[in-house]
Length: 242
Image (tube, rainbow, N blue to C red; front, top):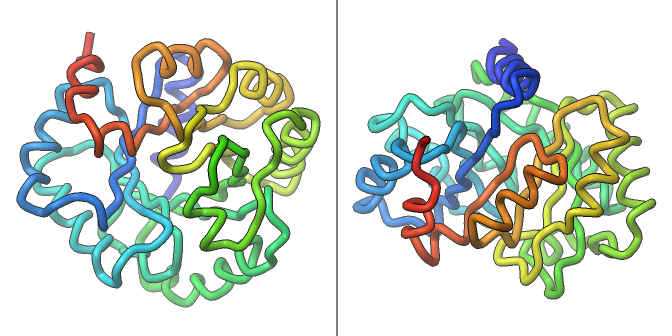
């Protein structure tokens, strides 16, 4: 299956803004899912990402099933570990942490995931994941025991993203991390976008409409927001469909 990826490509070709809401299974109460998804369905959201750095076993599976009761928006796994895989989702960002040098997150976890993926009818999208320093340590940094790339080292960020594309990644994801103090800067996004021939995802630290628009205007094809909605659902009101 390649439906989700092909739709992303088609949307980009049509200059459509793609927007994903990231839901962490450990940070949302099941009793609120129905109302949250109904609000989300009236927003500009085009995708729902599910995942987190540390998630309880079966939590992602149960959450995806619950989400799908209330929306037809594609649900894509954004997993921090193998236990977050579930065949109930529509697709999987098959992440490789290109910014780090811990082989377990470059290829080790991916190899271990294959036996599970054989049993699931998931669209698998190879994704180069690049963590960029944001002003504080993130959960990704702690869990993976890797360091982010300095936001001042733009050439290294660009070269890492391009290396991911040349290795065959279908997406590049620039990530400041959950609860980031600072979002990815415009100069970083634009520099990376100029080098890539594949879609560019940007997330972390985006807390308002201006920061969202800045990411799009700098070249992001799909912007991901998570923590901002966990802290203030009214942000969704700013993102109503036109």
